[in-house]
Length: 163
Image (cartoon, rainbow, N blue to C red; front, top):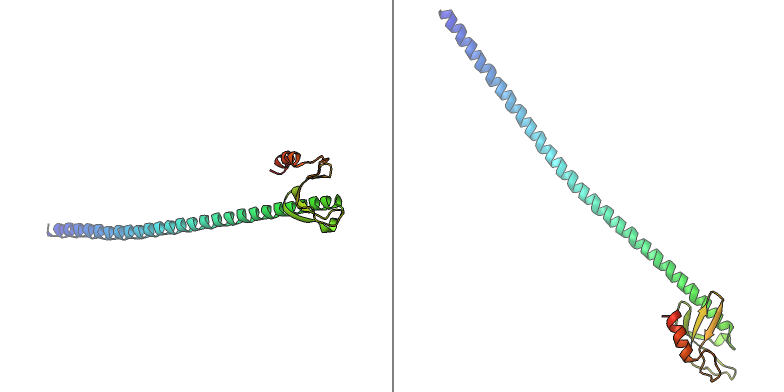
């Protein structure tokens, strides 16, 4: 019986030893899993921060591209307007007695004001003009009594074509 008790004590002691070792292994495994989980959370936080940075950078690049596109459109529009003004000014000069004396102001698109010398060699004062690119004609305002394009008629043309 003595041997049985010794064997039982050894078996029970072995079982406790085995359970203790198993618990230590489980605790170690849980600790490793907790560390891995913390590392995963930190990695996800870092990825989220990087994603926000990337999104902000992409947004900034898109905004810069949009600004550059708008600038290019604006420059193209300005170049087109400048070319349009030059064509209109050239057509106005063609209808003047002394084209080299022409002085322009308030030019916008196909409209503006011109001052040029008359047959007597004196400047007449600024008169409004409207250029019609469709038929390549120019109308210049005149104060003369027999003029077709009086200031009243030019007011209507000016508001419809230049306003």
